[in-house]
Image (cartoon, rainbow, N blue to C red; front, top):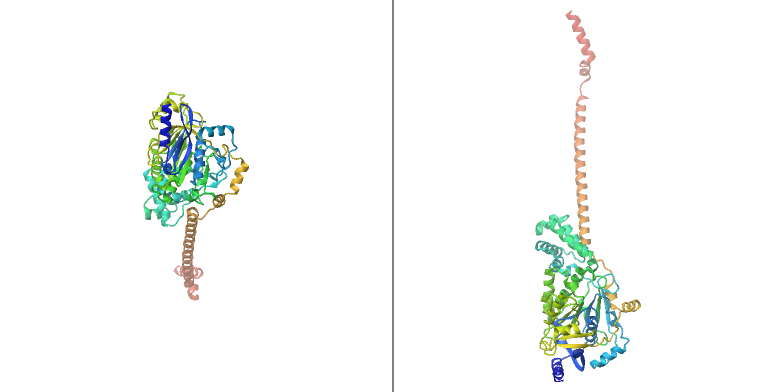
Length: 517
């Protein structure tokens, strides 16, 4: 009993905060839920990022849902990467259930069914607010890293962007990017060599192949206009609740290159446009990345370094990033070390490798005199988790096995009719889903090539006319010479013509012959 009382005191002291907080649930010890012994998370440190991990079926998605709901209630906007397509139920209130009431009673919280302001976003042709960005917004460095280019190839991309800036050629989509690469080694080869030096056709060919690879994963749908304004992620409704922006990724989970490209571009755009928050009392935006291993599995080392750098820096903008995955080892150690809040659901030990992973996971949590962390990790039930947060001074809280509270919204997806109703009310759908094909590098270069070809044709016609004129002049000179010759023959006197005629000559020769006889 003394042990239990000491544990309750440690939890109450360790999770008591001066500022605003949200409640995750109630602490547990030896399988018993301690009613009113709440495990809280201060809003002040939510920009320190976090992890939600656990085996399939242990309650990760419901924990994500609980966090999103409570953050929205506090007026904090959220963006969720919904890979499995099971989070749209946030837009409708929970129908309730006796097991939910029982859970809430154990925790010491009243249950209130609620719906939340939801916006459905899409990267593909699925319904929802279409997210797009231009190639120019990515810039040469980010594009080169996404395409995993060599230093030489990255230098060519930098030259291409410089040429487009100098000549006011908008790079909106991949079609523009491919066109300018082809132009640099074909029609515009001389122009590029004079201004920037020779560009290798082998290098541009390699870059084009990388772009085609990206296109095959659907990136041509992402690049273009109208560009999504990240400020639209920060909306609150008329009741002051933050919008929950759900990005549906069910049809691109097998295209990790596109997922990584989008994630990196979004983080870079947020970092470049959001103001510095300093040591704020609450975050500006929270981002949840479900199935986080999709970002890291096929990312190049350069791309991983870029993600790591942004995660380190973006918290100063008031943005917290939370990775949701089955095992903490899915997240690179360099990124894992940046995460403050850790919610670890149960792990399963089926193999020696699993047992080793559990031991490594246990080492990521504060040492507790009340738990054998390795044992607890394999004995947690569904909807239970080990929790460690950062307090308002950035110190880890005591480790707490926690009975997680139930979601207030529906724990299921919306029907097709419900989704269509949601789209019909969306202001952002009307703002971003109009297809716009503005004049850009592709059209301008095509026009430039057409004009050059027209000028070339006109020049050829001019030269042909000049050649024909010279030929006509020569013919006139030949005709004039012939005429003069004929004229000179026609001026000989008639007497000379008679005397020099063959008949007269034969007669004279005949007379002379007779005389000589």
